[in-house]
Length: 366
Image 1: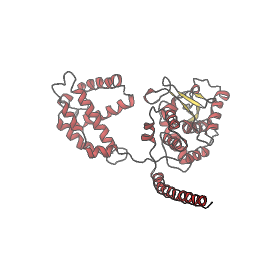
Image 2: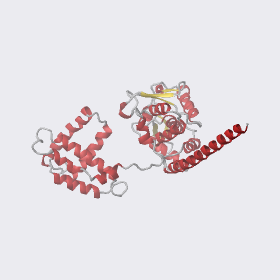
Image 3: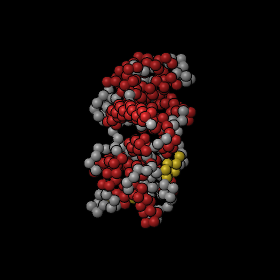
Image 4: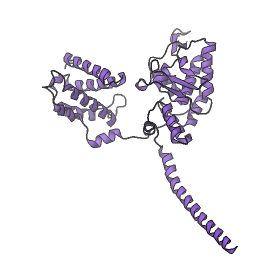
């Protein structure tokens, strides 16, 4: 069975360029599209895309639905199936308009990659995800060791994440010059900081309480005054690997370089939460933590709008829809409280009527 098709490779290269330059898609999104196309080509034996037929789409759809994840051994989630098929549908719609393919592929054939409406609803269903409480995060910070440079960096990383809700990619690419301790903010400059959609914005430290602010303050002072690092050096440098006393490779300190990815940051979170006796929560969950805090302390729509902008959202609804889901336990508490509030309000109304009646009676007697 063929493992490569030169014609397919050429047209895919054109499509990826289209996604990047015309559709402004980022590399991560394009990688997902490439993965979907690779799955399809493998299933068809790398047949030329010019021989695409709706039956191929139908067969692949059924095969994908029955396929198991290599990582978990369980069937692929509906969300994964839906995103894969959606990527393929978009590709073949584009392909049907390209020279050399127009007479071979019909636009309507791409629709055979669609799932049923029921399956789409399942794929897009919002499910409650585990999120730590702010008290749990403070517990994690309090339990993190801070003896070595690496340990201090790890603690400061989680402290700043709690104060700002910055994404892992942004944390990995921040420089010392991007943090302003006097104004208590970080400047997420997309020219140097890896922000979502390359957006530039300022994030002021949220009033998260605890020792987070002191931890990050001490860390910046240590880098600047003790290690004499410059403003262009990384705020959270990668670990320096060298030969240990036993002759093997091991962590020997900090390198004046940025991490190339977010994997090490996720490992820091995993180790910190496990050491504190808590389940692992990924870095993105801290944005949910801050949204929950904002919902609790913001008193006006304007305040919550400012809170939303602080984490990089243009629209408040983005914050509420993606991060502001009320946990089931809190939902139950609020719903039950509504009935109690109504009962108390009714009792207050009756009490007010009685008081007013008594006042009029007293006034009549006098």
